[in-house]
Length: 295
Image (cartoon, rainbow, N blue to C red; front, side):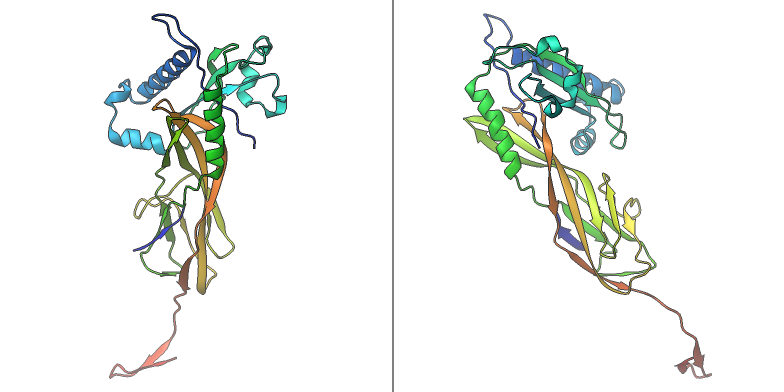
C-alpha cells in the first residue's frame, strides 16, 4: 500500500478569575459549569438521552473528529472596533459594554450547534455572561501566549492513503484517496499551568495533478465505502498529487473545557507521484497455431 504522510485577528479568550466568598463560586467556575451543562444536555439529546459518560468510545471519537457543539468565551469590549468583534457580540445588549479599564467588558459565553458533521452550524447564541470582571495578569497572559503558540504551531500533515495500493493507476478506473482526520494535540505548560492546544483537520483540498481539484470537509474512506475519488480520463503519464489541509484550533486550560481559537492554519503535503496508464484495444491477426500479429 502506498501511504504518504500529509498534515486575523484572534478573538481574545479570557479566563475570568474572581474571588469567591466562603463556600461561594467564582465567575470562572460558573461559566465553565454552565457551558459543560449545555454541552452535556446537547450531547445527551443526540445520543437518545444517554448521559455523556455512557456514550461509547466510537461516539466520543466521532465527536472529537467532527464536533457537534462549540463553546467559546469572548470579550465584547467597547474598545474593540465593531467590525473586529466576534459575530456573537451582536447578541449582547449595549448596556454591557461600559466597564472600567481594569475589567473585562461583557465576557460572554457563546454556543453554536449542528445535528451532524455535514450540517451547517447554527447562529451563535449567548448562554452565559459576566459583567465587568477583573482581569488578572496571569489569565490575560495565558490567553496571549495561547494565541502566540497557535500562530507558530506546525501540526504536520495527516496520513494520506491512495487506492489501488500501487504507484500507478488506470485512467478509466477511479483513484480513491482518504486521510486520517485525528486531531493533533500539543501539551504545553504556560505560566506553570497545563494547557492543551488542539489542531483539528477541517477542510481538505485535493490537487489531482491534472488541473482538477476537490475541496471538501470529508476526510474520505477506503474501498468499498470510499467517498473521495478521481478519474484521470485525459491523462497518460505521470501526475503529482498533493493535499492541502486547513486546521481549526481550540485549547483547554488545566483540563477544562475546550475553547475555540479564531483563525486557521494551512499545511500542504509533499507530492505523491502516480503513473497513469491508458488501456487501449487493438485488432490482431492470429493463425491456427495461435501465432498473432498486430492488425
